[in-house]
Length: 416
Ligand SMILES: Cc1ncc(COP(=O)(O)O)c(C=O)c1O
Image (cartoon, rainbow, N blue to C red; front, side):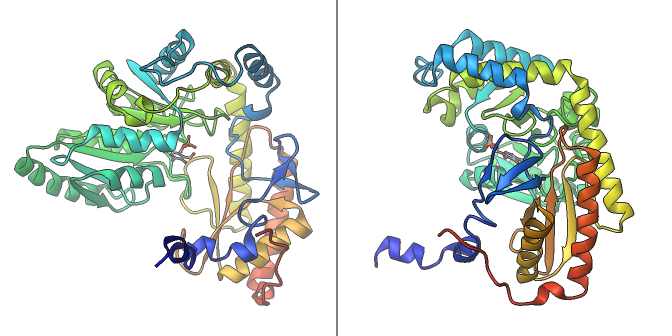
């Protein structure tokens, strides 16, 4: 059998819809300056799907520094992996400043969050160790766990009683194998917007011996008094053993980091394969991250504006009778009921007739029969944007409930 024939005969649950969806529902192209209103297929749309929480993507100071750094260094410098020939004072300065900000001793930069999490997990555990992780963890955690050759136990999402049960099992297992335990959760879960129950997770350290890794991709920059994330928000930052975040959201760039005590970060520096065997972050990204971090620390009004928009959107949606689940962060899900076909009709209507662009999540990411519209508010959205969206959502919900979207999907001009 030919390998390619075999794999392409089943494109997977999302790929199977490519013929109907590519370029519209999947792989859409948003054009123009990154802002709340961007162009989709020639038409300006109010956009709620970019993780540009603090609006830094297009901040004039950020754009200037990015451009100057690119002009000075190009995208090549430094060449090689950090360990071989790709280290610079700027990389180390950024690590130091990130450590100071998230109140940890030390930090290692990562080229990408996804690879970094995978590789950190891989470096931390061997076949004798046990991983205990939240069931709704991001793909990078799941894939890191898949690399693990030892035992793993999953606990029901944010269910501390279940986590305790899994820790009892893990502890018994660790006694047999002579291994240790790593617990992994997210600070903010990117689909539901729930905060990981970090307070109660760390409380279990009194009863069990484990180390805690927190992926705070959505919490960094958006939560906590200084913006240092979910650990700061819940007052438990000092009990998170490894604190991870990406530059792909609040920092509006590429790259990531993990922070912790110096000895464990030194260990990761010499053992994380994604960093040892890959070229280091290009200088413009490092200098750009320094600028973003400075703004994050010195312009509290960015986070203030973000939360004004978040609060107006979330309370407006709730007042209008929408189910926004249990979010405790900026991530704003709107949970509706309907088939995948209805979801496609609804989204097309939202885009074509209301000029609103948001992400849509359907089965298998959410259970069958659920349609989730996922809104990401940012500091640069306005109250007008919020009101326009709530009015439009009222209209489409009415149409959904009256069965108007049950009609056969009449398609979009797909590009594949
Ligand atoms: C929770 C979480 N962890 C990790 C990542 C991966 O980060 P990156 O985009 O830097 O690879 C993401 C997505 O960006 C995420 O949402």
